[in-house]
Length: 271
Ligand code: IPE
Ligand code: IPE
Ligand code: MG
Image (cartoon, rainbow, N blue to C red; front, side, top):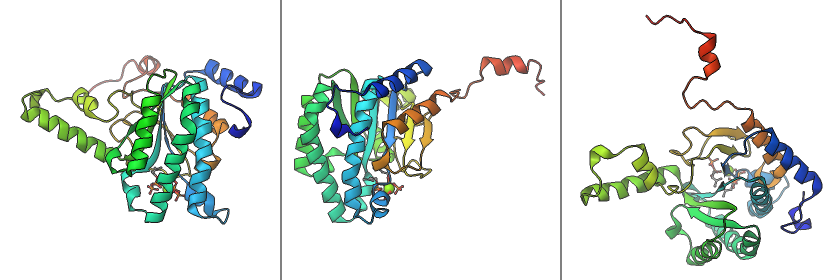
């Protein structure tokens, strides 16, 4: 579906039916996180410049955000710019930052119409001032929305997140607020930039790369991972539904044993 053709509250009957089937089929992930990759290769395959791929990727962001909101996903985290992406050519970085400003300007109203709250994780201080201002404004303007939280990972990396958590915990230890012996999973979770967000149930990566590229390293411990060859600018809601179907057919064991396995092997001798 082309998002340009429909306004926020007009969903095609076919799409509504697909979403209802998905909801009946099984659990909708509470938190979906996406590594939006392949913009450059998408552009190259069309004989175009990389930035054309980034521009085309914005339409996928709009479609996936809208579809997740309609489906009842609680949190959608989008990996938009990594710490390592600062190492790209200056021209590409400034084009990406401009695109971010434009998108925030154009889309905040729609986020409000759809009751979607915007948030961000990452080293926001490194973003150019206009970008930061636009982001902070959009976050403030959507702060009371309840339907879904759209979290943009900007200047983000999993290692940065763990380092900043360790720094903050160390300061609290120094100030006597935390006792070193009490530091556990929960302490670390509370100091990560995602403290208020549940761990992702499903991580989607587009463009066929089998890696996390420094995304949500701590938080992805038990995430289900779905990788597709589709480049991000071609990834639209129908493929999101495929990813959710795959998620619904997984068996999440979290390191435990399912009861029917125990029943199948009642007398395994322990030597
Ligand atoms: C993802 O697409 C967008 C960002 C990382 C900002 P890429 O720009 O990485 O595109 P490819 O992977 O080179 O095709
Ligand atoms: C991951 O994509 C980062 C984002 C999608 C923002 P990259 O293109 O930067 O990752 P690598 O270089 O393929 O690992
Ligand atoms: Mg890439």
